[in-house]
Length: 225
Image (tube, helix red, strand yellow):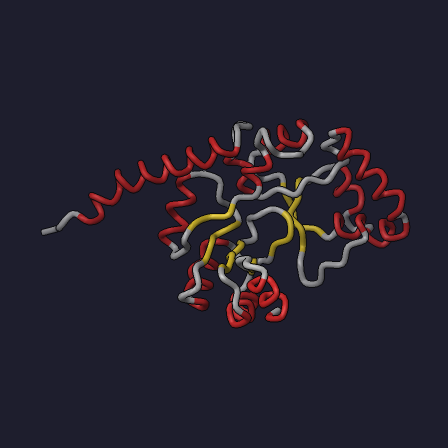
């Protein structure tokens, strides 16, 4: 990784690296990453197997003093406060920003996130197989729909008919067919209830976090006895 990180630094860029385990984070820290992103399995897209709650402080301790951002399951001010308590410097949002005015997703996919109760995702290789992608050692968390259910346990058949499958996926994505199109989203979709502007989400999360800290910290820091 170091040659790529060095090229980025030479161009004046900062380097972030997403890790789902401590062994993934350590080489990136050694190679010179400016920020490590600790992503729990709750997140959407490519994820590992460990949940955010234990993963974040483990990576924070392992790569200190490099700053860590928390990802996977964060969508509101409560999550930001929790991430700070776990030692992270902030949160990285994915699913929450998919359901925004600026998001390029079809409106039907945005609404599917809003309608989610957080229990309708699953880890699978099926979207990879259909797209002809090879992502060693990783699964992708996506919305469970007819397409995924049709090929579950029949991945061999999907490989045989991949050309037709990818064409159908692209058509479904363009038409907004949420039952046949792929939608990478995290379990925190259950915390998403509207489709605002991205800037409003940032302001809301900051305000929620400030209110929580203002309410909780005085009691936590109050002298006892």
